[in-house]
Length: 428
Image 1: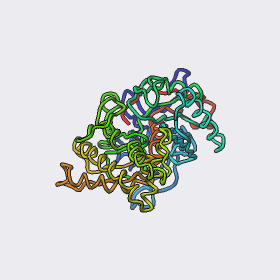
Image 2 (image 1 turned 180 degrees about the vertical axis):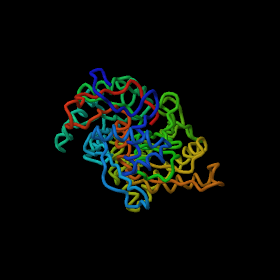
Image 3 (image 1 turned 45 degrees about the vertical axis):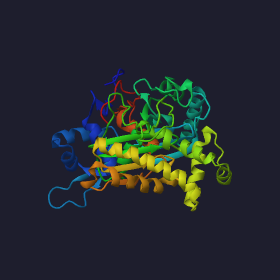
Image 4 (image 1 turned 120 degrees about the horizontal axis):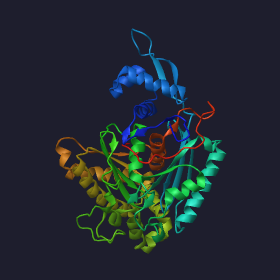
């Protein structure tokens, strides 16, 4: 019970995913399952599953939707399904050049989606205030009552202090360093807010979408910068402080460009969208022909102009993209060798148009240099939701993590009228 005596169904307790949390995860990814199937997939006893499912049904979070048509003999098995209308979650991916907001229902279905300008040169106060306004407006326009919203997953680049909800970097501007992002947004919206790394969120989003045919894979995320994530046996690898797999700061052999982190030769400095744009800007006639202008806040827009020119067959536009892709391929080799991976997923707005080129070049590097290539051919895949995977993952992180009321909104007078984030988060 919470401090007001109202029952709750937490997803995570003492750093472990609870039985109810595991059931909700399975139903969210599989759609419908019987109690027998839940017991088989979790390894829990039938009695434990029956008790947990009863609680979820009483709480309005799960309902029965008929009998299993594939079942043979024996007593008919009733299929269970999440009550998609019970709760919603908001996911926000914010970058210097782009912002994406999604609203998902309790089953993970998309209710709404919006693409906005990035943080640009605005400070964190103005940026977070604008985000709160956009979220409020998006919910209103789509008829989503705020009391149905479980929380917000705010997805940014790293490094982060996820517990305090702050960035540990002075990017994109010095005032962002240790600014209370989650506390500020939570205060404006009246909702709990969780901070998540963009690449980790994108990896989780792709895993939930069922787009990756393995439970162990790496992900390269590229917006205005480059990030990385790894899922091992179905769980995100976070490291000591959830700042693991910063592939954008892998030092590349032969690299020399100065990086924002203070080092030289990092993948982000050599191969990120800004490096591609600057290479085009160095050729004034090419930049003019492609319409590349060069302001930092327009990096992704300029990168997209280059990518579209490549897609139209412009070889001059292809050259800087191919150079970038080869550099990232070198970083991907390090990622694959460190974690013994055979699958790498590409996600992020920079891959919307240029994704096929990067997939081909990165795959070629892995086939040539990955240590595991003799055992199995490395596979490089584009994300199913290439531009929105991180925002989707942020919303799903909320659905899996924040404790929820034992009854769906409107089903009983004992519905909690506030939701509080947990003091800590368990494995996700």
